[in-house]
Image 1 (spheres, helix red, strand yellow):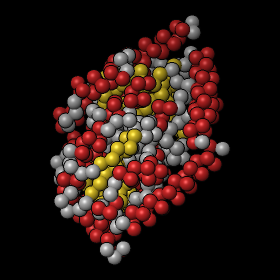
Image 2 (image 1 turned 90 degrees about the vertical axis):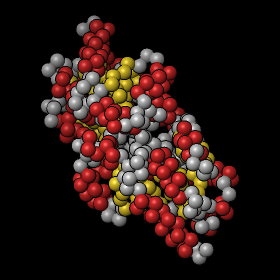
Image 3 (image 1 turned 180 degrees about the horizontal axis):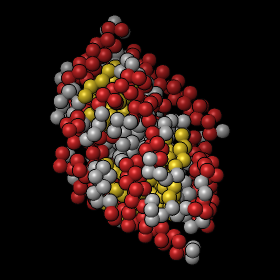
Image 4 (image 1 turned 60 degrees about the vertical axis):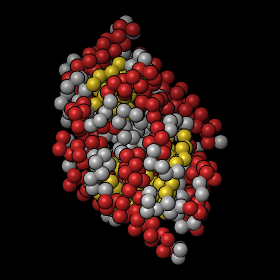
Length: 222
Length: 222
């Protein structure tokens, strides 16, 4: 019974996500779904990314959080439009939540929409949000066993940022092992070893975004 | 519709959890539900705790994980009975899963049962497992905003371990702020600042467990 209901919920969500993706595509908007554990560094990645790209691209952010607007407040400091979604304890965003806040955005004036999901390495992987690509932040302080323990999210993510490498000398994290496990699960994943605090190692990530936005514009011939 | 089903699922789970707790209590077994984000250090805490207590108490462990037996394999090295539950991608354990594996344990020969939940700071808080107490591991590398962002788990946990303090000098973690937020949410919480890697700061945790096991035995007059 629980399983049937769940399949129904996921099916409806997938349908809504397809509609959203068609809408974003018709407007030439490239959309990212940013995921990771609590404290992996998603919001700090977003802060660095917005400062880097906001003069080059027209950006907006949707922030998912259980109850607070702490992340949205941080993003608002970057002077980029940001919309808060509170899930009231819910463990992931879904496509219906995204649809409900779209009237607050001017989709005709947007190149890139980044959606920061709830901090959770499990549930967000199952709910499409209409995004073009999923992005995962794994902090090296979480340990190198995570790709095999949470394979779905690693499999789905086009770009994976191995964050907090400034702490690498103080941990026993095995970078070679985690890379081997990630490529075993997802041979096409793009990886960056980075510190979102110092911004070290983030250039390939910025370049990838710009490339993806350009490809999206090209695909729709705009 | 989704909400009604969810309330029904939670209600049935609560009922099963009450039955399990009665069973554990009738056997004089003190039971812990160990929770935290992926990579917070739950399994390392467990390893240190088992080595410390296995000659003083009769112990067993139930390990929750999405797909692998990586954590159970680590615990098995401690020469303590360990049972693996794989949730096949599910984001939390529930009371029915616990019930299903109990035939593998000799409940008449047990003082302490520790259940390590799936790495997730959201969903496990909603599903009782029949435990006496919840325990939360927060690693300081996750950042000090976590209590306010994930309040339910902090509110429910009787003991909270602030882990990875060996990395404190290399982070900007505000220990005073996190403590103030935790006590604001949960004034009765017991806290330990610890490093599960070095075992520094874990003595209050070991003492608390021994005290709780003794209280449980006392309560049932055994």
